[in-house]
Length: 402
Image (cartoon, rainbow, N blue to C red):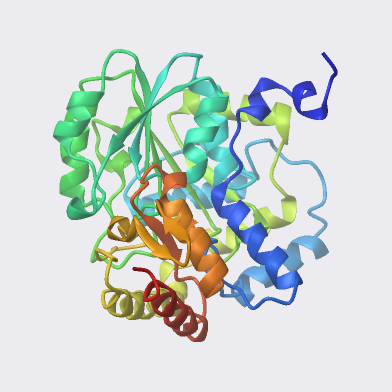
């Protein structure tokens, strides 16, 4: 058989799906390059700039010659500041040896996956879930076990569902709160009900992805690791990308039981070593600051959320709940399935996203990518002017379906 580039690649990469959010962003850029006016609501990226005090800290890092190799798990002063942040914001006590700083929270999760998963281990993922969870753990050899949720329960799993899913083969569970893509936030009481199940399986590790922690419209926030009886089972993932509009700085971190932190450091030492020195100096300023510094950004997101909710609820065929955090809406659009435009049929969420891209010139992401095929994800991390125009276009396009 003749060798082609595809069959020369590993099965690992051939079986790997491209990130749907990145793929849609790429399509948007391609259309824009052709002179087509596309509004992209596909990427989870704040449209704000990094605060000036953080940029100044990075400049100081350059001037102070932070240009050498550092400890793989990060500068000690940054890890100390992260410990202080966990205590201040989450009432969780870590020491510096329990912190690992990485090139984004995505690498943090990959480190955990490669450190803990053996082929055949089961990983529970509540659906909808962030697109990369499934692919990262599949690459590590895991068997993915989703737990389905619905818009009626705000896309949150129950203790009963967890109890009926977890078993002796379960090695890990991962969830996000606030959730990407649904914006759902688990309350302390809801997390406690899940913890009551998890403590019965002391060998199961829980990865709590809290990257959207400060973009939270509830009155309180609670971390799973703050439960004393769960502390040794939880890896807390966070970073500076979303809360401080620092997506391009690529800086994430974990707080974890020390044996897991050491394993992640060992893995990272063979892949990337430490994260960018200048990004770490910037992150030190970010995590040391009061969460109040991002209040104007959070208030802007809340205003946009409320606007989008009001407008989308007026579109027939779109069912939507009220997300409590992050900057996404995740409407159920299944009522539109089977409808037509010209000779085209909208059979599923993939078709609807393609229809809206072609006819409305608005880029969204199919819920299929997040494990919820009846939904689509809309990011409102865009200017109010863009959101108003996008909603107008979406309404006009959907009104043509019959």
